[in-house]
Length: 251
Length: 240
Image (cartoon, rainbow over all chains, first blue to last red; front, side, top):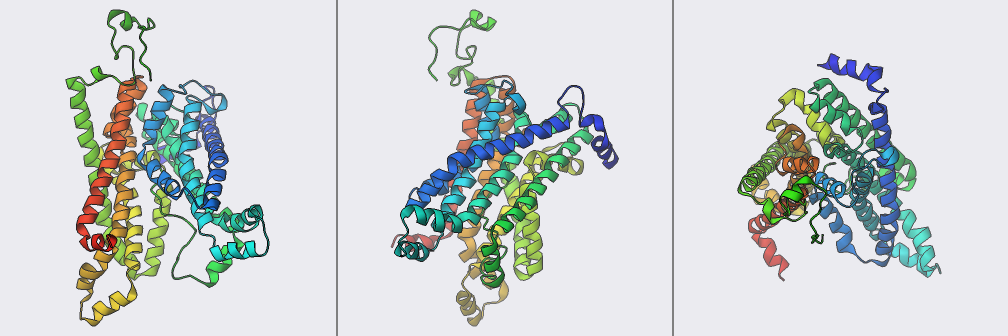
């Protein structure tokens, strides 16, 4: 079995080939879908959550959006959108049902971004904000120069979570004949080829882990203050605190 | 979703019989034929069975792991690290990676979802037990509670809300993720959903999607009720 999988992974024709839907094309689709949909969700969700957090409003929405997101199966939303509003036609480099997939992924990227951003904004110490106002900062300056920098680590962990979740969600697009690396796995099941199934699953899983580890590293680089603070204090109350809120599994 | 009044001549069937099925409407009473209702019932029962089995499996494994993790710091780091890694692996890939171990059956789906539940539950159990105030623990020890009795009579009841929070997240997630089991033909409602999607059957897709969400909400409410029943002291505290 291991040999078969190894043979599949090292066979160049499985990666690039004539029909154009080999692994590299799928990988490209998958990366493109993930990146574009997370950016879409950031553009929509981040300003909204920053504003709500700054004003101290919309807490119920910000927290519950994650719970709602958890209850909706990705398969269901994908199937509904691809049969309905957006259709399943090929969208350029995004592949079959590209638009429906893109929108579904962006919707699933919204909850972690909104929830984390809102919580990050609210967790900024109110004394600090008071002090900034006392120093004569305008509301805009307080937001830009105090709240946002202090909330940045939690905001970024939301974006990181969104990336990892969307990477996983994109795999499932294949179940409704959408684009992405999941197609390798579903093709393996259709062709009754265990080596292809395992090889596809390995590619998806290994890149997911790389994404998680890589983004965690970026997050640490972005947050020197938090790192210093973590090293000295609060070791006991917030062990392993990577500013990660409790979440469900990736889809 | 306005039903068209004019029959669409696009399909051959529409010329023969015109009803909401041949028009492929999203909402369609004729969809609920007795054979389809039977299929829905079977799928729903399978869905519930997979969700319950996987959460119970996760719980049974998570409990001793949480107790061990609480005692040994290094083990806790290992457990939490492994959970993060499992979180990260997409469900379709996780199921597929388990196939060589457990085959193409329902066991694979239950085991895969059980692993996800495990990761949520271990964390909530460790967090819940750790949040028990030290003075409460001290008092109980001072009153002569043995460690086991301390755990069952003092620590677990106080940790219960956090643990139940984990159970709720695990259950709702499992309901949504069970649909992916359709790849192994054990996806409960997900199997019907994907069948509907691949045959462009709108009524089936909409109704099974609705059922999935309704099931998640129903199980969540059930767990909230269970939690309230298990922690009567919190109710009096809350209604101050």
